[in-house]
Image (tube, rainbow, N blue to C red; front, side, top):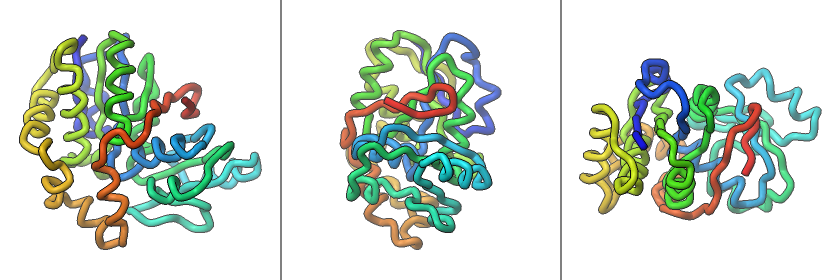
Length: 233
């Protein structure tokens, strides 16, 4: 197995691994953490959308709406982008139509892979085991912030690479950098990321609980899979 890292969706078209691979979409703060939390709380499907204009049509089909832009919940959506909010609610049987600033764009960008998964610290062990079982090359696609690099997503990529070190080889400088960065930060990634710009953005928005939660490992035993534009388990 080879593991490649794309540091932002803008770089994904320039990847080395083109076919026969699994792509894992990563947006730690907060979309992929929130998706894992929603499924852990009983949600049955999540439709990732890159446009807010699509949401009303899904409401007419019985979906609840989850929408976020620049860290804040949008309009009359039932939910925003908060993993802790999902875990405080009984999501049993709920279908979500979901649009965020970065994370859903990242998930949809990854849709051309043979298999598209969602990853974060919250499902790190379950995700890594699934990748181990697949025995295919892996691309870890970091969401970043509006196509720019961010540290926290790269740390998740580095943690996955470390988990698979006995069966998979890092491919390229980005993968090697992600692993090196994780090696520096892994004793306390939450503390390490206090310098990150998106952490400060979320603090200003009152989302400190979400930030702390996102750095906790293995809070969800799920691996969301994108099939035909819909995330399910």
